[in-house]
Image 1 (tube, rainbow, N blue to C red):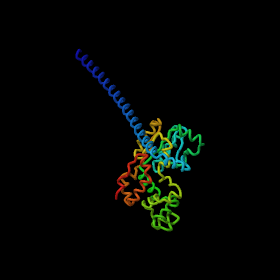
Image 2: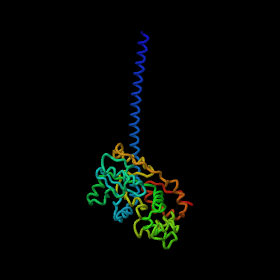
Image 3: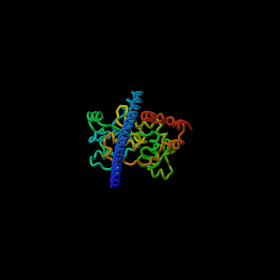
Image 4: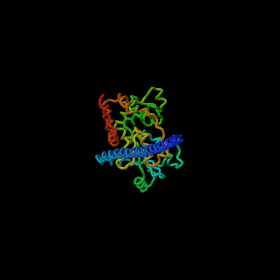
Length: 322
């Protein structure tokens, strides 16, 4: 009997210590999660501060020219979309995940329960109010009090993406407005056909170098400002005049969108839409620019230099030599 009682007592002690160890491990796991969350939040804050500080330094170094560009823009707030319910302003940049980001804005605007942004199939590009639709006093109040954010991308990668989307994939609208001009001036086609199908039938293609020559030509901007798909990002969002609270990068899109939702305290309420595989990667830039002469590459960098500097993108040294 004594032996049985001893065994029961030993078993009880083992169960007690096992329970104690399980509780300790659970507490340790929870502590680790809290520490990990704190470190992640600290890293988010640090990255954002670095991005904002870079913008401030670049802006302070060339205040007059940035201000001139701002006042020359007849619609400086045209790309700023507003969500009054959540106090949000998003400056969208074409070819920088703007469709998915607009889906998120639309879901927020529609209110709770929040729909999965990936399920939105309608055209979202004209479904959100622009800041320009408000009075001057309302604009100033919203810019002062709302959370403002934008997403940017490597400038040369964005240009390649714009070319692929609008000229390589054969867009009738862009062919009519821009393609015919590019073929006439740089494609050795004095009288390009009016319609895209006729150009295809004749074997007329707008090469990437044709597109670059069009961007570099002084006549292009004299006729009208750059089309938004290839207009410089700083000219769309004016970061030297508008103090953004959050700056995301296309290169870290999933992580940055999740960080933005954390800043807005919506990470538990809203799903991040899956990003597509980016066919225009940094690794492919050099192969795209092989057809572009060195002097044109250098001119193109000068044309987009402010975007590189403001948003912390490395000068493409690999494009400096043949």
